[in-house]
Length: 188
Image (cartoon, rainbow, N blue to C red; front, side, top):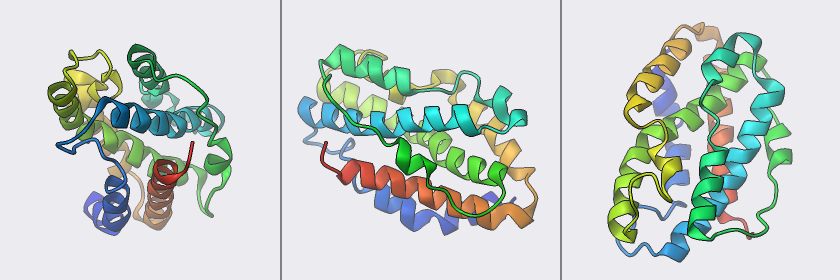
């Protein structure tokens, strides 16, 4: 599969989602950060649960060590941001037509791609909020020094996908960006 096409055809959804995330703002406050983590947690927790039910057998090894909802829960606990959050499981269960493996990979593209930007977010929130590396920002630190290696590993799975599945992957990625964007705008 052509990843350049995937990036280009999901660029509008990617940009629209990024616009709802205030984490790189210069005036970022701890309260804004905690609220954002709570919203992220809803999506990531739903993603992790959806993976448990829908991961194609051949991709289960790829998922090892990639569950990240617990990192957000740890960050929220560290920052004192607990409380009712709600559930997005139903949003994850609404799917698009197409091959289940391609749908899975399209959604995973969004989730794994977020680890790349997470490195910049971690540095920013550490500076703006006075956090120590990995304490309160462990979700964004993510895979740390392994981030690039894990991204390359995921990319190799995507690029090996037959081009006939590209439309499904693209549609699933767009859907995942939309789930994120809606979660960032919904009232908790």
